[in-house]
Length: 397
View 1 (cartoon, rainbow, N blue to C red):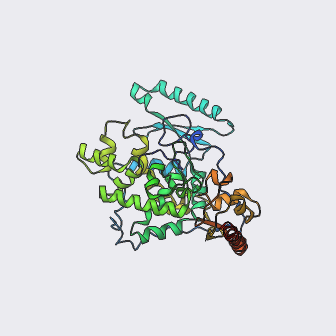
View 2: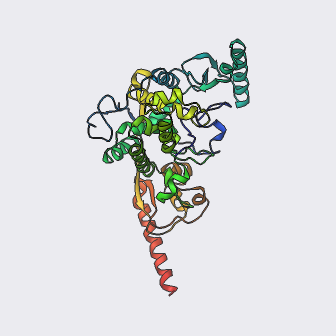
View 3: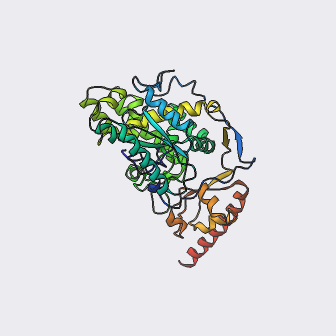
């Protein structure tokens, strides 16, 4: 499933070769997922509990997701990106030896992307003048800090993580894998990329179509629970092929067949050795080489969030209730159950596509979410529509 990611690492990178997408690669005008952080929406954060998983696939306590040999500095680099630098600053570093940080770039007060890029380019030029080889100069790379973004991601994760962990446990998969959503999307259900990846798990269209997840009006890649079920299935398939979680997780970004080919070509199954030795940076680029390290860093930071951040809270789960439509309806009907709040309706139902929101019929049997206090109102309204449709069908016979 080779793709580019819209992620906490990659979302806001500025005009440089990146592990994922530049800011302007994110689909325009996506709906912000913040509904407000009123006291009613916040709940205490809970540190993850990764114990009692001895029977999970490929799991051995203390070693299933330990840092592979040779990747220690790489993981620490991403821990620092998550915890030391805000999204108003970043670092110029070596793209091969990521731990080699040349300078911290302060972007505070710069309002436009053009202004930010200009400053980054100026700093890179100054650093390049001091480097001795063309190769070192070519490897200069800018990485935006993500401390505040990580705190937001932990907040949003409170809406979904417990359900996601349940899905992975039921699939007999290590629940640490649910933390890939930090890397893929920062738990932003509205994450969309111009290359087509979508939702919390950033699943590509060609990956989802065999599972009948996409229609003109419903895209289940954007449904947090349905997408998590598919991600669990994909990761299980990756492990079946690669028999190693470092390789299987890397395969989620790079594609499992590509990873398998590299293990055969280079005669090693150690990810650290592949990262050091694979010569083609075009076929095994920065994104793939750093994907597992950033995943391990996300696990470390979330597990010890109380140490890294002054304030850590979870969002409460959305106060919603699912219902299966007995009859086809239009999106405006759904919005009416949210008191006309289109933004809130989208956050509760991110799987409804632009065509659905533009007025195309949403078919019967589609699962939608409504506010719990509007559930009975929605049921009554749907019952009336169902009776109307039945009467019209009867007249037409």
